[in-house]
Length: 190
Image (cartoon, rainbow, N blue to C red):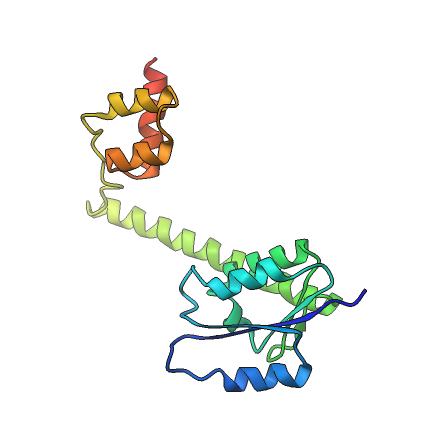
């Protein structure tokens, strides 16, 4: 069973032209095309989400180059993993990477290794920076969030399932992290 050729075109601004990407994909012959004018840094890319929902097993997604598809290496790897789980291939024209081939899979493995290497180096530099900042007395750690005065009241409502966690967090005007930290403290105190 042969799937559909599905194209994805993205430019960063409304002023930019999509014609060069369109002509590349037209040469291949697309069954369906998804197009958006939005920054790649934006997490909310409606046409990309529509494409991911649309594709089915056996389909192949075509892009001019990988930077059109993803914000960064991690984003790219997440998208490729999602497509792979659906049985959908990815073909990048510029890089000539086809994830349905062994060579394409190898290239993606290299990208994943590079991402892990970059991430490990970033974390190491961050840890080193914190050590230096502590020695200089400039690092104080995360700012402590005070427990809201009405926490116990809201916590009891949440505990009795009168309100959901998102409502409790909004009423307390704290982060989700802080909310669950305070919940953990309450549970530890009995």
